[in-house]
Image 1 (cartoon, helix red, strand yellow):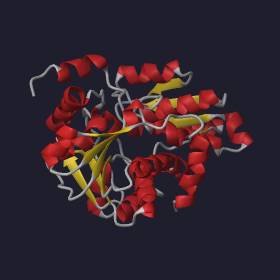
Image 2 (tube, rainbow, N blue to C red; image 1 turned 45 degrees about the vertical axis):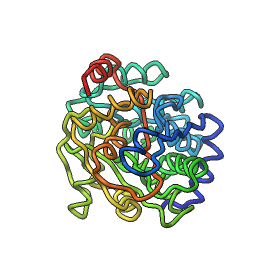
Image 3 (tube, one colour; image 1 turned 180 degrees about the horizontal axis):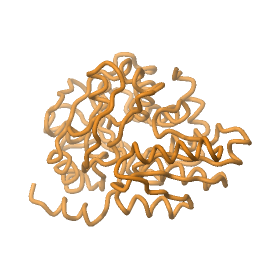
Length: 320
């Protein structure tokens, strides 16, 4: 499975191409929660999301034949953007398949990085069929947004950064979708401090990993529209890594509502001067709404900023 050494090795590759994002102490959240709360500002990453980490590591580990054939991925936006960036960096072909529910700004962001975008169907399962066809018929390498050891290890480099920046950390609140991010971060943090607790945060509609963990196995969960669109989609009935890693490494999973996500976006802008997308707001939303009360220094991971700016303006213009 995923080893701590995989993450350390990934950092040597990934760190050459990304920025080390800052950590800030949140006075307002600390007062609200009654503990020191820090924010990891991964929303300030080059492509506006953590996904670039796993993408660079995965592409760097392809063999020459795989690089020549190119890569394909299923994405709700941020993985596609990260993979497009990495593929462009290494001059290889990249096709991103996604459903028609994906926001226009995310599609345009991926195209701007040189990748081809194929919009297929009304959900990610339909888009997956095209990604599978490109893999089997055209020999391209499929890079999962989460269920890939090199991707998970790349995301885990965030955990190494967080630990160096907040060595006294006792709780980490991390957005949860397919599990690539939380599994990598949890493996890194818990390898450095086995007593540290990792709390996964997802939306309360269509949370596939949450429902699968409750069921004791990967299951199909109907995909629904959400402000946290980067967290939507299934985990795959044939999930190889993240279901078991989540079961082993994540201490608790909490859910936030659409209103709570909207309030989190509003709060991030007006109280922390940060632009975040819905997925980037769920960790702070969980703390604001006391979904889980930490009893020590904690970090909320703000994982991305790629939100439609008209939508963002409408949310921050609402009275809190």
